Length: 334
Image (tube, rainbow, N blue to C red; front, top):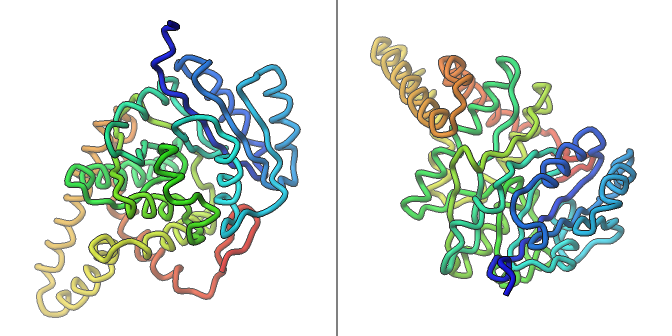
């Protein structure tokens, strides 16, 4: 018997649209995975790219038999956009586990092992940890934002409170995916990762959150404020689909600021103390997450993070309700 006979077969699924500047970085990281090469395959879906994405992928995989490229030319059922690409790729995949990432993500060398480790019993979804790369204050604050949010999600997972999943670093079992009927049958959502997460949990599967330095993948930061607001608006679409006990904390900053403004007229010192207290709590949470992920260079930026987070949350709430269309990968979603 081969030493690999008892290992689990994994299919890595990547949706790519106009990713000529990032796709090789992603594929090179996957090519360096330490999991036995005969136990994983890669399926890349080219979603009508208008640049050199397809050509670059073809050149990279030409001598790599476990890498496969599929040109997406039609839609399946309810699926659109990234969900449609993943629906096509899942139909081609041979693995018992689907590992989903994005074309702008570089995964760690032990990624497969880290994501498979929690897959026991009725676990249907495993969410990994991803942060943007950072080189300055703006990108470092974005990185801490991801660290902070995923740290809270990981803590909630210990109490089996399902907050959300993250489609750039996510594992689903074939059994749980097929139990939903696949992306072609579930309701369409621009936050396709959360929709699949919800559908899987509705079918009595459980979930796990991986939060460790060994599992840390790196995406790219958002370079401009308008693009950052668009990203947040997409996330807000998904957040408003969550159960009320998840939505309520997400709206807490708005209520908190209203309370602070009211108190500022009658008890300004109390208002100031409450605000400073909130900054301290958010800093402590951010530092705890930074420590877990061994991102020491982010410590200094954590002092600024609460201001970024609070004003950023308010800006997102305002932007969400503005009559601005949601745009993703050059496509407009209502």
